Amino acid sequence: MDSILVVDDDSGIRRQLKWGLDKSYKVLLAEDGVKALELFNKYKPKVVSLDLGLPPDADGASEGLRVLEEILDQGKGTKVVVVSGNEDRNNALAAIAFGAYDFCQKPIELDTLKIILERAFHLANLEAENQRLQASKAGEKAAMEGIFGQCPQMEEIFTIVRKVGSIDVPILILGESGTGKELVARAIHENSLRKKGPFIPINCGAIPETLLEAELFGHEKGSFTGAQSRVLGKVEFAQGGTLFLDEIGDMPPLLQVKLLRFLQEKVIQRVGGREDIEVDARIVAATNIDIEAAIKGGRFREDLYYRIGVVTTNLPPLRERGDDLVLLANLFMRRFAHEFKNKVRCFSVASLRVLNSYEWPGNIRELENRVKRAVIMAETQTIEPCDLGFASATIIDEGAVATPQYEFDLSGMDLKEARSLVEKKLVAEALDSAEGNILKASKSLGVSRPTLYDLMKKHNFYVGDTNT
Image (cartoon, rainbow, N blue to C red; front, side, top):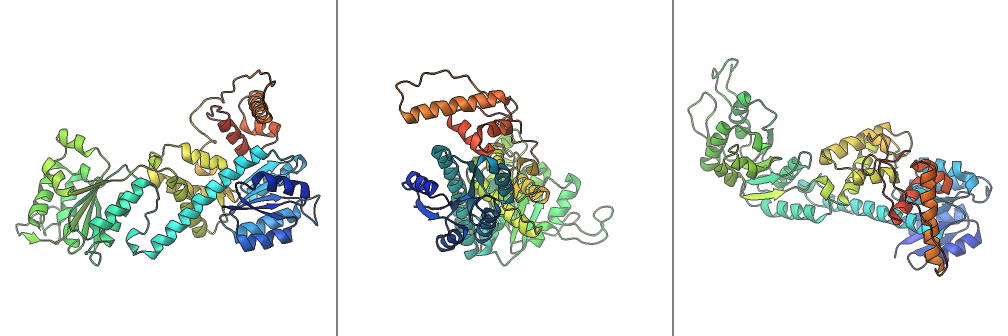
């Protein structure tokens, strides 16, 4: 059972939260900052509920903010939910900017707080799993370095890499642009019997057709204008190692024939030469095109496909990798925060919603670039959607928040049903009054924007492009 630390100088609130959370979590209670830090250092809970008004500054926030800073410094992945009164809104927002995960206003609505805590634990567990994966990869050979994931599709990729590494056959990696095909190719090489040999990559789609043949097979002196000396090609440089042919689907038909000959006979001829040169190199190829459609359309040779695709594997796009997206985003955030000596700590809830709803046409490469930008641009320790290059917290597409009207009779309902229905009505009215502006609606309800998003999800409101 996960532990949660509740820090509040009000004994009544401590008893309320102990009673309300005890079935789901191991609840640790602290009445002041000293006790809070003592329990935190002893149990290292993933989530902390923190009242900012702690003695000796019960009417202010200095002690609460000090405790927040200590907890975030000692537990990098800890999610702190700040609890404050209406008059402490500015301090609560300051705590969010400093790195607190979310805030909940007093008087505490237990159901609302539970939603926030469940989300906080979910994210904390994801980040912990990410760290575990990194640690386990570090403990292996460098073969899997740079490849992270825990979704079923990636687990299958890891299995294939380990199996084919020691079997010296050509491999074809399929996947959209930016999914990490070269990383997988390098992992295959590092797991192979050829790992002491060179790994030579070449992008067949990035080199003009007139130059690609010489890049691959080399050329003899005088074979064309400007060829002032003999130059070895990528194939020869891969002797004893692995040749990675990226975007092989863009290879011109004439070169496909020459590559097929090399795969069949293990010999090449340089441009302008007549000598057969034996080369021992393994071929790993990759493409982002529909290879079967290219074969049917006559753009790719079927016999070459069978030669390079003795083993074929598909890399999933980022949008189909589930929680891997958050794992990778946090990995990139920590990497760039260290590189740029930036104190960015986490993504805001709005940012996580954008990350999870975006289609990621550029896949991991695009995610990496957006997070890198965010770490550079962030003005606080929390990354917001604008830092990632999104104009606003776009959840689905353009449009207003759909807020149907509710009229009802509470008679005959139990307390839980009535509370839920009233809550739904208040949310709808707040959104209507604010004309879909989430920030205004959340302020009128006395909750944070992340909490309002969760309430909207709970009550099945449609969320389009929201005004912030």
